[in-house]
Length: 197
Image (cartoon, rainbow, N blue to C red):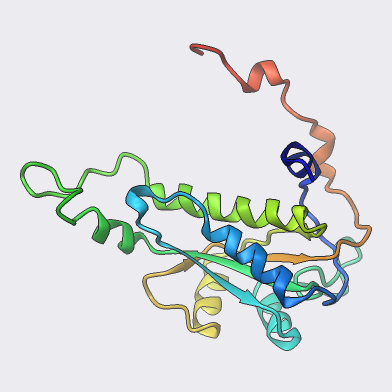
Protein backbone atom coordinates (compact mmCIF):
# COMPACT_ATOMS: atom_id res chain seq x y z
CA UNK A 1 0.00 0.00 0.00
CA UNK A 2 1.31 3.47 -0.86
CA UNK A 3 2.02 5.73 2.12
CA UNK A 4 -0.59 8.29 1.05
CA UNK A 5 -3.17 5.49 0.91
CA UNK A 6 -2.22 4.35 4.41
CA UNK A 7 -2.69 7.89 5.76
CA UNK A 8 -5.98 8.41 3.93
CA UNK A 9 -7.39 5.05 5.12
CA UNK A 10 -6.55 5.65 8.77
CA UNK A 11 -9.59 6.26 10.94
CA UNK A 12 -10.67 5.53 14.49
CA UNK A 13 -12.14 2.00 14.47
CA UNK A 14 -14.51 1.03 17.28
CA UNK A 15 -15.48 -2.56 16.39
CA UNK A 16 -13.17 -5.50 15.75
CA UNK A 17 -13.22 -9.23 15.17
CA UNK A 18 -12.08 -11.14 18.23
CA UNK A 19 -8.44 -12.26 17.78
CA UNK A 20 -7.52 -13.71 14.40
CA UNK A 21 -4.22 -11.87 13.83
CA UNK A 22 -0.85 -13.65 14.01
CA UNK A 23 1.56 -12.61 16.73
CA UNK A 24 4.12 -11.83 13.99
CA UNK A 25 1.83 -9.13 12.54
CA UNK A 26 1.29 -7.60 15.99
CA UNK A 27 5.04 -7.66 16.59
CA UNK A 28 5.72 -5.90 13.26
CA UNK A 29 3.38 -3.11 14.34
CA UNK A 30 5.15 -2.85 17.71
CA UNK A 31 8.58 -2.78 16.05
CA UNK A 32 7.49 0.06 13.75
CA UNK A 33 6.07 1.93 16.75
CA UNK A 34 9.55 1.93 18.27
CA UNK A 35 10.99 3.70 15.22
CA UNK A 36 9.79 7.16 16.20
CA UNK A 37 11.81 10.24 17.05
CA UNK A 38 12.54 11.30 20.60
CA UNK A 39 14.22 14.41 21.96
CA UNK A 40 17.95 13.74 22.34
CA UNK A 41 17.19 10.13 21.33
CA UNK A 42 15.98 9.76 24.91
CA UNK A 43 13.68 6.89 23.94
CA UNK A 44 11.33 7.41 26.87
CA UNK A 45 8.44 5.67 25.10
CA UNK A 46 7.37 2.09 25.86
CA UNK A 47 4.54 -0.20 24.71
CA UNK A 48 2.62 -2.85 26.53
CA UNK A 49 0.99 -5.25 24.08
CA UNK A 50 -1.93 -7.23 25.51
CA UNK A 51 -3.10 -10.21 23.45
CA UNK A 52 -4.54 -12.62 26.03
CA UNK A 53 -8.38 -12.36 25.94
CA UNK A 54 -9.01 -12.26 29.71
CA UNK A 55 -6.31 -9.65 30.22
CA UNK A 56 -7.86 -7.57 27.40
CA UNK A 57 -11.27 -7.80 29.12
CA UNK A 58 -9.78 -6.62 32.41
CA UNK A 59 -8.05 -3.67 30.72
CA UNK A 60 -11.33 -2.80 28.95
CA UNK A 61 -13.21 -2.87 32.27
CA UNK A 62 -10.67 -0.46 33.75
CA UNK A 63 -11.39 1.88 30.83
CA UNK A 64 -15.14 1.67 31.35
CA UNK A 65 -16.11 -0.52 28.42
CA UNK A 66 -19.82 -1.31 28.38
CA UNK A 67 -20.35 -4.49 26.30
CA UNK A 68 -24.09 -3.70 26.10
CA UNK A 69 -23.62 -0.22 24.63
CA UNK A 70 -25.34 -0.48 21.25
CA UNK A 71 -23.18 2.29 19.77
CA UNK A 72 -19.80 0.70 20.42
CA UNK A 73 -20.20 -2.61 22.26
CA UNK A 74 -17.10 -4.46 23.49
CA UNK A 75 -14.73 -2.59 21.18
CA UNK A 76 -11.83 -2.27 23.64
CA UNK A 77 -11.75 -5.95 24.63
CA UNK A 78 -12.73 -7.67 21.37
CA UNK A 79 -9.73 -7.11 19.14
CA UNK A 80 -6.48 -8.88 18.27
CA UNK A 81 -4.31 -6.87 20.65
CA UNK A 82 -4.34 -3.79 22.82
CA UNK A 83 -1.37 -1.45 22.48
CA UNK A 84 -0.82 0.65 25.60
CA UNK A 85 1.68 3.45 24.93
CA UNK A 86 3.56 4.68 27.99
CA UNK A 87 6.02 7.54 28.45
CA UNK A 88 8.51 8.58 31.12
CA UNK A 89 9.24 12.28 31.60
CA UNK A 90 12.09 11.29 33.93
CA UNK A 91 13.99 9.54 31.12
CA UNK A 92 14.00 12.82 29.19
CA UNK A 93 15.28 14.77 32.21
CA UNK A 94 18.03 12.21 32.84
CA UNK A 95 19.08 12.35 29.18
CA UNK A 96 19.23 16.15 29.22
CA UNK A 97 21.42 16.10 32.31
CA UNK A 98 24.12 14.19 30.40
CA UNK A 99 27.33 15.95 29.36
CA UNK A 100 26.39 16.46 25.69
CA UNK A 101 23.06 18.10 26.57
CA UNK A 102 23.75 20.41 29.53
CA UNK A 103 24.45 24.12 29.05
CA UNK A 104 27.71 25.95 29.83
CA UNK A 105 26.76 26.13 33.53
CA UNK A 106 26.10 22.39 33.67
CA UNK A 107 22.31 22.72 33.79
CA UNK A 108 19.55 20.87 32.02
CA UNK A 109 17.67 22.89 29.41
CA UNK A 110 14.54 24.80 30.38
CA UNK A 111 11.93 22.74 28.55
CA UNK A 112 9.75 25.18 26.55
CA UNK A 113 7.49 22.28 25.48
CA UNK A 114 7.08 18.89 27.25
CA UNK A 115 8.45 17.01 24.25
CA UNK A 116 7.85 13.59 25.84
CA UNK A 117 4.16 14.09 25.03
CA UNK A 118 5.03 14.94 21.43
CA UNK A 119 7.17 11.83 21.12
CA UNK A 120 4.58 9.43 22.56
CA UNK A 121 2.09 10.93 20.09
CA UNK A 122 4.48 9.95 17.29
CA UNK A 123 4.64 6.43 18.72
CA UNK A 124 0.85 6.27 18.72
CA UNK A 125 0.66 7.51 15.12
CA UNK A 126 3.11 4.79 14.06
CA UNK A 127 0.86 2.17 15.69
CA UNK A 128 -2.16 3.56 13.82
CA UNK A 129 -0.44 3.71 10.44
CA UNK A 130 1.32 0.35 10.82
CA UNK A 131 -2.04 -1.25 11.65
CA UNK A 132 -3.59 0.18 8.47
CA UNK A 133 -0.57 -0.96 6.40
CA UNK A 134 -1.22 -4.50 7.72
CA UNK A 135 -4.88 -4.30 6.62
CA UNK A 136 -6.08 -3.79 10.21
CA UNK A 137 -7.83 -1.04 12.11
CA UNK A 138 -6.92 0.84 15.27
CA UNK A 139 -8.89 2.84 17.82
CA UNK A 140 -8.06 4.76 20.97
CA UNK A 141 -9.66 4.94 24.40
CA UNK A 142 -8.49 7.45 26.97
CA UNK A 143 -9.66 7.54 30.53
CA UNK A 144 -9.87 9.55 33.73
CA UNK A 145 -7.06 9.72 36.27
CA UNK A 146 -8.59 6.81 38.23
CA UNK A 147 -8.35 4.59 35.13
CA UNK A 148 -4.71 5.49 34.64
CA UNK A 149 -3.85 4.69 38.25
CA UNK A 150 -5.79 1.41 38.13
CA UNK A 151 -4.18 0.42 34.82
CA UNK A 152 -0.72 1.16 36.21
CA UNK A 153 -1.39 -1.10 39.18
CA UNK A 154 -3.03 -3.85 37.10
CA UNK A 155 -0.21 -4.05 34.54
CA UNK A 156 2.62 -3.36 37.04
CA UNK A 157 3.71 -0.25 35.13
CA UNK A 158 6.70 1.38 36.88
CA UNK A 159 5.99 4.63 38.71
CA UNK A 160 7.93 6.81 36.26
CA UNK A 161 5.86 5.68 33.25
CA UNK A 162 2.41 7.01 32.36
CA UNK A 163 0.04 5.05 30.15
CA UNK A 164 -1.63 7.31 27.61
CA UNK A 165 -4.62 5.06 26.97
CA UNK A 166 -5.56 1.87 25.16
CA UNK A 167 -5.25 1.35 21.40
CA UNK A 168 -7.26 -1.71 20.29
CA UNK A 169 -5.94 -3.18 17.03
CA UNK A 170 -7.52 -5.88 14.90
CA UNK A 171 -9.61 -6.79 11.90
CA UNK A 172 -12.21 -4.05 11.67
CA UNK A 173 -15.93 -4.78 11.66
CA UNK A 174 -18.62 -2.43 10.38
CA UNK A 175 -19.19 0.12 13.12
CA UNK A 176 -21.14 3.29 13.77
CA UNK A 177 -19.20 6.27 12.50
CA UNK A 178 -18.64 9.06 14.99
CA UNK A 179 -21.25 11.83 14.75
CA UNK A 180 -18.34 14.26 15.11
CA UNK A 181 -17.32 13.48 11.52
CA UNK A 182 -20.27 15.59 10.35
CA UNK A 183 -18.11 18.59 11.23
CA UNK A 184 -15.96 17.86 8.17
CA UNK A 185 -12.32 18.70 7.67
CA UNK A 186 -11.10 22.25 8.13
CA UNK A 187 -10.40 23.62 4.62
CA UNK A 188 -6.78 22.97 3.64
CA UNK A 189 -6.23 26.70 3.15
CA UNK A 190 -7.10 27.24 6.82
CA UNK A 191 -4.95 24.32 7.95
CA UNK A 192 -1.72 24.98 6.02
CA UNK A 193 -0.18 28.45 5.94
CA UNK A 194 2.69 29.30 3.60
CA UNK A 195 5.66 31.41 4.70
CA UNK A 196 3.75 33.06 7.58
CA UNK A 197 0.32 33.08 9.26
